[in-house]
Length: 416
Figure (cartoon, rainbow, N blue to C red):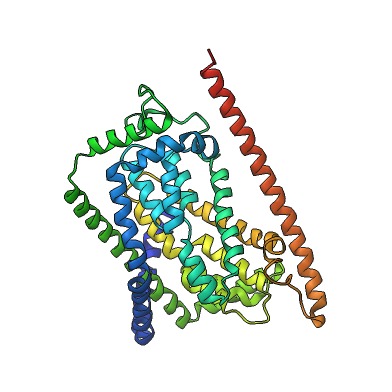
């Protein structure tokens, strides 16, 4: 029997099993559902809903076309995406997931990005917002705002590296100008780039044609639908994770991850945080910050950076639901999240002494644990070498591609 034919029976068996677990553990089921609902109502709804509306309004006013014309010379050589991706990147990094995917889907609907460009864009613009990283994780879970320095450097720096890596995703041919010709600044418009940017914004606003009231109504309507989907997924994964815990399945996952962490030299007590972060980013980050005091702080921070960059299956489900209305594929996004998570954890270990040395003493072990410290130090050195090699290769290839793109542009437009 093929994998495709096995998919439906496995899905039905999983749903029946989940239903039985809800009947066997009604108290835990109700409590976890209320906990997920509280997270959505107290955190996600007030933080995401205004950004959803504002981003919709900005698209209607043509702000994205302004960004597209201004940032096109930067975004195309570096990331192989149109300049409008700069607007998505800015909004995605400021407001967090899933804003980047939502705006990318909007650009795809307006024929401003192709499938490959959209997949590149959503892969590196999906990130945690600074408020959650600083307020919730650093202050709330680690009880130390200085941790935000290393977490931000690893998380957002890793996202930038993912953007450089994703430029090699998809067809290597030049980006077609067709989808962008009527949306960004046309070549026929004379004047400086700033003038052409405002002209493109004005043309987009005229082409949209909606009144202010109609635009606001539609923005609220579409944003409300999306935030309800986000809330439903958060509640579902909260219940799903709690039922697996009650059934003892999580203990098996903890044991497997314990062995994997021990093999690479990480404290096995971080397995609970990583398994929790596999499903839901908030639960995993909290567990990483509240891990046993015997776990060195750099390893806790590395686990938190891994969880923030992976995003949790709850975020993945939100992204998949948004991409479902487009022809953008989920698999490139998932692979990019996994690479981003590993890179972020490595960057924490690599940058800990350079960044955190001025804030706190370098991480050391007690005298009885000197053997463990030596082993961990050797692993950290190997990780550092590996990260330096990856960064060097990415930087060298990106500089080469940038030089080649500028050289080709010069040949197409020779100086008179």
